[in-house]
Image (cartoon, rainbow, N blue to C red; front, side, top):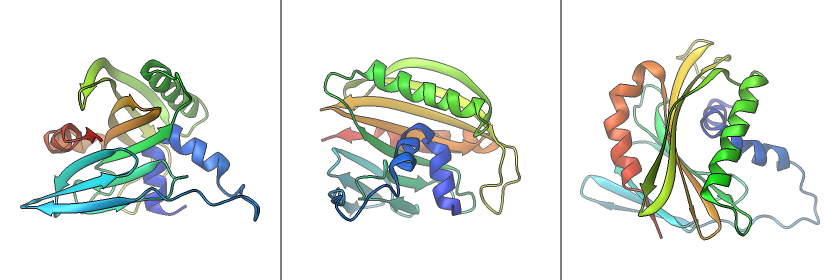
Amino acid sequence: MNNRNLIVALAVVALLAVAATTAGCATNTTPSPTPIPATTTSTGNNTTYSSAAGFNITYLKNLKTDSSTNASTPVRLYVYLTPNETADGVLVATKGLSSGQTLSDFSNNDMKELQNYSSTGFYKSFTILNETNSTLSGKPAHTIVWSGIIPVQYNKTTPTNTSVKEMQTYVVNNNMGYVVTYKAVASDYDTYLAQAQRIMNSFVLT
């Protein structure tokens, strides 16, 4: 696994666990997932990323990004907040939900997966620091802040057992679950928090 894929896996581990489970299982008789189109539009210093998965989000246009229109990959966009540390960023992930699945179902299932990965060693010392009900794009949302230790070296500039801190906001719309996450090396978290919150607050369901 390359650095970028590992970073994304660590950022939204539960959603990517589903993708990782199904990856490579397709046969020649299985149709490829329909791509999810996306466009970017720049105005002044800002770029707005518009995804057919049902959201827009805006960030400074000088920031580097990774994006995916692959329907089987849950992370749609990763916005890096610093050129020197590829762990620090804001990302948006999506997951199709069953009819009637609630925000509580979605967020609780994801947190259970995070806790399961902590118990199996994917993370160490997984700790929920704060948990609140919130709103995002005018919809009820649920936000958790948590910390953990990554027991591997996931890029050239970080040692093993790096502490990370994440803020994840969950929201549901039209049977689609969205997770908007700010992820950072713990020592960087406060440095980029205000910038990350501006990007997260720009998230709009479409």
